[in-house]
Image (cartoon, rainbow, N blue to C red; front, top):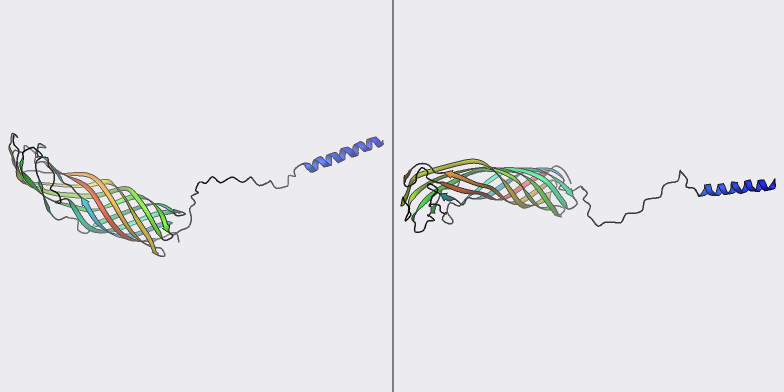
Length: 284
């Protein structure tokens, strides 16, 4: 009997010890082991001066490079080049509006922006450029009188910037651009080409007009400065390219020109310097 009681007591003691070693269901789980840092930067959107929507006005100075090149008459041997420094470009002042949205991640800023501007004096002054034939031994020249009109332009762009200080942001930008350009040209003169069946090409009163809306691209860089709460100043440079346009010359080819008086091709590229001021609706 005593032996049985001793065995029961031993079993009870062993069971109690085993139960004490088991984890309790109510006990909290141990914390996870720490993960070693990888050294990669973490971009977390933060409150800042540049967050949110903004809108403002701008003034601009434009220089539109034209680089006119003559083809014809009849697309033959009279292809030439413009005399340097003449009828080359269009300068103008204008004004407009811009608006956009920024997201700030520490010192980095990303966003999207749209703008539109109109030129105050869209017509350039008429300028004359001399064209000579590329044929060997050719003499004489055509004088091209040309002026251009650009009403304005607009763009939709992405922006990426870095905050040099809390209130100063440098950025790069690029995207799509659109403009309306018009060229008005007149051509007169005479060129003699030795060995050409027509010998002398003479033009008097040949005129051309080209007016189109053109789609292109634009890139640039700038600086924004928050000069007072919610207000920023901007200085920006942009280069915009709209390809090439062509004004066909018609009528008044009196000698040796066949059915065509030729055409004048223009390169439509614009350099723009802008100053702006904007109000910021988000971030502080």
